[in-house]
Picture: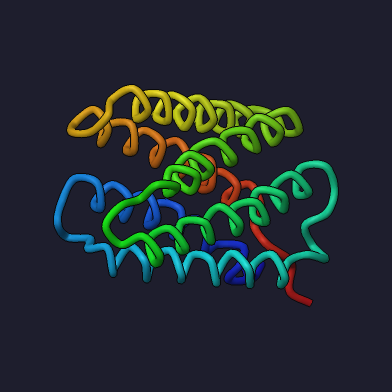
Length: 174
């Protein structure tokens, strides 16, 4: 079996994105410039992924995930524009943040409905953790509770994407 970069990269990129998000909230390690660069890179990767996999992402479940990628491209581009245009404030960055908390959570529910256990359990757990983390973050305001919310989202979405990589081992060489 061989796997393409598009098969396995999300399992590294999802936790990396949530780690950067968490660090941007709780430390000075991620500057606004670094955040802008991360958002630009994410936007480019999402656009390339959407275009490069459009013929393979068909059917009910992959179609839902294609929608997540396309909408994710849009909400991430909103984040790029917000950070680039309003350097002193972030009036609409929440669109990007909550978009990435909720979109995958909804897609994990659709995915769970089409697979058997144990994968369905992992996808549903990922969805619940993502939405729980989003709610925690929303009501926390800032500080430790907000960081906990972001960490819970990251754990849930990482579990789901790792399950997807494990569940889909790639294509046979031949």
